Image (tube, rainbow, N blue to C red; front, side):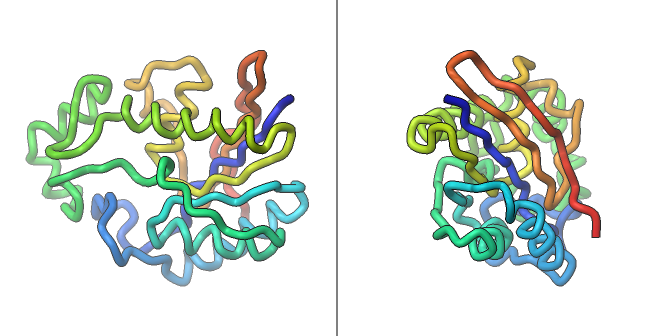
Amino acid sequence: MTTTFFLVRHAAHDRVGTVLCGRMPGVSLGSVGKAQAERLSERLANESVAAVLTSPLERARETAEPIAARIGRPLEICEPIVEIEFGGWSGMSFDELTHVPLWKQWNSARSVTRPPDGETMLEVQARIVGAMEQMRKTYSGRPVVLVSHCDVIKAALLYYLGMPIDAYGRFDIDPASISTVTVADWGAKVLRLNEVVAA
């Protein structure tokens, strides 16, 4: 049986692109992000979704809530699709990080670099792919929505595309985007990458 995954990046918050929020609490959607979440719910309303699972972080939950409400499914918290643990970098601005040598290494060789007190991209990949493989058995033949974070989604896509983790910069995953993957015993296929629902 084939299981389709809609990998949704959370909608926009006021610190996107300026601060590495990581797992810091209290990062919520702004008005733009709330409008994006509503558009996502409209886009996914007719996909016969079996389950909506979300990262526990506020910005992901706030994106997932209208989707779950629109399709009439309970919202489930899924710890394995939470944001990367950035450790000591969490809450730093990208301007600050540009002066950190390990940050430069992280962005050039993520396969072998670990943020201070954080996790590697390969560890992130293992947890999201492991969760998706388990969901494939639970929701066999039925579509599933996963609301997660940019690099976590990239890690899953790189795995299913058969690409190395250091190729993460070869495609974008925008806020409030959907990337669609089908996974089956015969393998996997990426059907859509970074689909952004127009206003």
